Amino acid sequence: MKISNLFNSGKTVFSFEVFPPKKTSPIESVYGKLEEISALKPDFISVTYSAGGSGSKSRTCEIATKIKRDFGVESVAHLTCINSTKADIDRNLALFKENGIENILALRGDRVEGVEPQKDFTYASDLCRYIASQGDFDIAGACYPEVHSEATDEVEDIHNLRKKVESGASHLISQLFFDNSVYYRFLERAKIAGVNVPIEAGIMPVTSKSQIERMVSMCGASLPAKFAKIMQKYDTRPEALRDAGIAYAVDQIVDLIAHGVDGIHLYTMNNPYVARKITEAVSSLL
Ligand code: FAD
Image 1 (cartoon, rainbow, N blue to C red):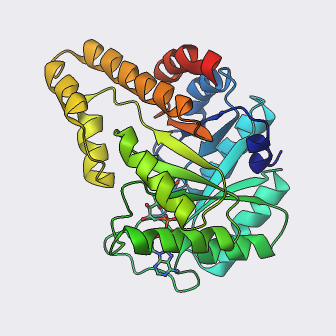
Image 2: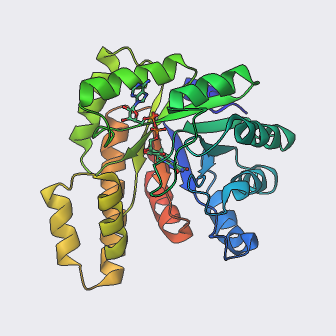
């Protein structure tokens, strides 16, 4: 099933993101968790891809296939191009076709220190255009409510986002954010710029102190005072912090749904407990 068709139903699309295990762990080590997560029946599950060549590359397709075939949930395979040649991308596309994967989240990927990027694709839009020319895939792209870290300003970033859509991305998934007002302003910019495909809001439930530190340093999301207060208050009580993080994410999602967003993409961090708690809290609202 093509993911872009989901947005025609009038319902808020509700999807999850999961990731493959490190190459030092057997692939089967995540299957139990992924089965539990799939049992929550999101509209689709996307599977991340390692741009840095950590070894989990081939596992994206394997896991996306497992989720679709064995766990009965439509899947989306992420694919990055920064460190890939055209031949690498061709191999991946062939593998996706062979395994019935119809949906791809086309990404540039982050620069990896000490690794010289390949020359065949410069931006995600180049990859979108190439995938569109290679077969019948549904293509999604990434977007950044707080502006991508390498963009000069929000005008340039939104202009580049429009190019991505013109190159074949039929829906977008956003970077995580903790302040909904930032997201609503981004939606306005996108609309003004003529970005007229469905956009899903990326929500990351923060359930541990180390996770928040890692996430903020990686993606530069701004932290509203309310969020910082909660993190500070439950700093030394892991269970309370987890529950507060879930409550914060639910609060964000309720507000987003009330504002009529196209979809919610939950970064599950492969955590079935957290995914279940949030799904139970919001499923009647979608
Ligand atoms: P692009 O869209 O190419 O944008 C990168 C930068 O280039 C931006 O600053 C943009 O403004 C600029 N730009 C774009 N097009 C042009 C142009 N034509 N001319 C000039 N400038 C341009 N990373 C992974 O490694 N694996 C994953 O699985 C993964 N999944 C992700 C899922 C989501 C939902 C999101 C939001 C991000 C994900 N990332 C993943 C991270 C992503 O790879 C990085 O944020 C990366 O730095 C940018 O990728 P992109 O596809 O957005 O790049």
